[in-house]
Length: 301
Length: 304
Image (cartoon, rainbow over all chains, first blue to last red; front, side, top):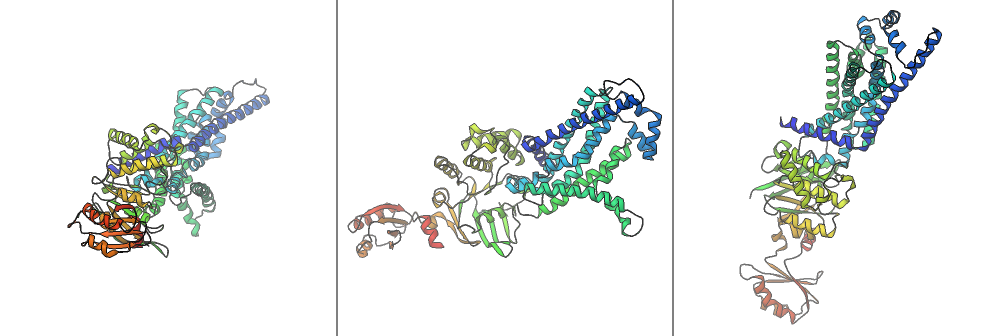
C-alpha cells in the first residue's frame, strides 16, 4: 500500500514537472497544432473533392464542407464499395458508422502518438540518471516505485496531450464542417483520444524501458526512435513473410509481442475486441518497461 | 558503543580497479564523523555504497542496526547529499523539498512546514518558488543540504557539503551542521580539514579504499593533552625546559617550527603546564602562537 502511495506521489510530481519542462510543453503544443492543422487540411481536401464532384454532377457547390460527404458516406453504393474493400461486415459497420471527422482524427492520433511518446517521455528517466537527480529520490522510495511513478506520470502527460489534440481537432471540425458540432461527436473524439492513449502505452513502456539503460538523454531519445521504427518494420515484415510452414509459422507469435498487431482491436466498437486489445497493449507496455527496469535495478546510479 | 553505521570489508571493483579495498569503518550513533582522504581514496564510493546507490562486490553494511540500506526500512531515517548530483532544474525548492518530505512519509502539512523551515534555515526564504535552474551554484548547494534535514533523519551523509559556498554562508553552514552534534549522526566528507576540525568529533582517514585511521578528533589531535608552541627558533637548552615540566614529553617539529608538549591531563591542566613552560621557553626564543592540540592537517599528513 505504501509502495503504491509512493508511486502515485512520484507520478503526480512527474506529471507537474513534465508540464513545466519547456521541451515537453513545446512538443505538446506542436502535437496540438499538428492535430488542428491535420483536421484543417483534411477538411480543405474534403471540400475540394466535394466541389469537384458537384461540378461533375452539375450540382450547386456548397459553401461549407461536409454536406456531400455525409450523404455520400451513408449512400448504399459507397457502403457496398467499402464492404468489398474490407471483406468484413463487422469492420465495415464499425468504420462506416463513424463520422469522417472521427476517422481523420483517429488516423492522425494513431499514426503520430508513438512519435509524441518518444519525444516527450523517451528521455525522462535517462535524464534523471545522468544528472544524478534520481539519487535524491531512491533513498526515499524504492527504485521500482520511482520507475513506475515516472511511467505513470508520463502516461498522464500523454493522455493530456491526446485529450487536448482531440478537443482541438473537434473545434476545427465544428467551425469548418457542416453537421459536426454535435456533443455526440465531441464525446466520440474524447473516446478516440482515450483509444489512442491506450495505444500509446506500449510505446511509452518501450521508450521508458530503454531510457533505463543509458545516462544520456539524447541517446535515450535516439534509442526510443530506433526501437519504435523497428517495431513498425518488424510488424510489417512478419505479416508479409508469415506462412504455415517452417520458421515462418512462428512469425505471427512474434507479431503478438508488437503493439501494431493489436491496433485494429482499438478501431472496433464491440467491447470484446476493445477490452482484449487494450489489455494486450497495456500488458505489453508494462512488460517493456519492466524489462528495462530489471537491468536498472542491478545498476549503480 | 552503539553504531549508526557498520561497514565491514567493503569491496567495490570497477573492472580491475578497486575503489574500495576491504574498507571497514564504524560510525558511532550521534557522532559527527569527518571522512578525510585524497582524491580517489574511496570516500564518495563508500558513501554511495552505504546509501545503496552502488552494488558492492563484497562486504557488509549495517545501517542503524537494521541491515543494509533498504528504502522500506530506512526511508526518512537516512538521507544523503550526493556529490555532483543536480536537482531537477524545473522544480521549485519549496515544492521539491515538500515532495521529498511526502516520500519520506511526512504528512502534507508536516512536509510543507519542514521544507519551508529548512529553506529558511539555509537562507533561501526568499527563493521558495524560484526554479532551481535560476539559482546560483551556492544556492543550489544549500537546497541540497536542506533536503538532507527534512523530517529530522537519524543519519545524514554529506559529500562535500561546503564546497562552492561563499564565506558568509560557509560560516553559517558550519554552525548549522555543528548544532546537529549529539542529536543526529552526521558523516561529512571534505578536503577542507579546518571545516572538519570545527564540525566533527570523530575522524576517519581513508586511502586506497581502506581505512588508515578512525578515532575521535580528541584522540587524533589531542587537544586535552597537547600544547603546541610555534616559535621563532629552535630552543637550545631542552634540559631547562624539561626541568620546568618534568611530567611532560617535549618534541620539536622542524617543519612547522613548533615545540610540541605532551602532558598527562590527569596530573596537570593545560593552564598549569603553560604557566610553567612558557617563562622557560621565552628565555630561549620568541613565541608566535600557542595552541591546544596538534592540527588535524599535521596529524593527517603524519598518517599518510
